[in-house]
Length: 279
Ligand code: ATR
Image (tube, rainbow, N blue to C red; front, side, top):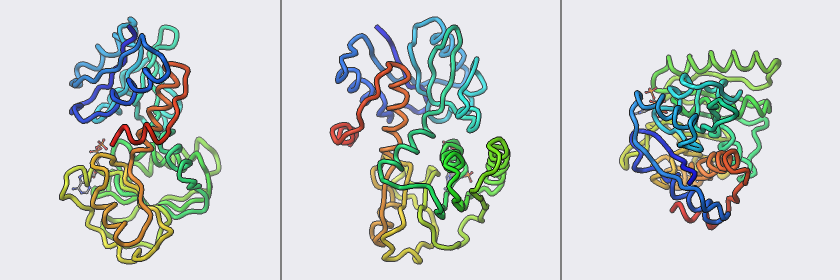
């Protein structure tokens, strides 16, 4: 039996086993099973050992170990290096290699909404573990976007901007620009407003920001990376204002699709059936 695992802490909430086992069954990959395991930081090396010796065929890494895992690996993809974040492990030759499929998952979610990162104004809340994956999507697209980065702790946004500047240098000329804005400060109207913070995971939480300028604006997309709960207050309020909304389910499906393809060679379909499976 090929064994796959998602590791994190906490891990009970993870929908990855449901999704990957569904795909294993759908595509007749009956010698494989996907489970979840709560781990501590000290266990990461052991997990890598298990991938190396074949006990584990593949691993997904979730909060809060995506950064720490990056530091433990034999090798990592360019995406993982750019974002210093790893969510997928597999063995290549005798090396355990780390990938970041969150970035690609985010890209897939935009494509599925026909949303092109070109000449857009984008407001991003948060500067946590997943935010570099979002930023690198825009750097890669190089589409003349204006990005505003807003985090409660300004220093963390500054650090991300430094990483951004270095990355942009690696890419050579880059048409995107990034500007840090103070938490709560109003800026010009944007085409995309993304919540990458953990605010909204709990029912009563809300980002305290004055969005009244967006009243009756049907063009702006409010995107919350959170998919459980399905509709955070950030999205509920946007809907009430008449804005377009989207939660993190497609990004979750996109990152899983890319990981599944790396492990099995099969690119599973993201269709209504699988979208409904996660509800
Ligand atoms: P993770 O790695 O899981 O993303 P993280 O690195 O702690 O976790 O990031 C969580 C993000 O949510 C951060 O941007 C955090 O802001 P700070 O950098 O100021 O901590 C943000 N966040 C969490 N709780 C918040 C709150 N109550 N108000 C505003 N931002 C919050």
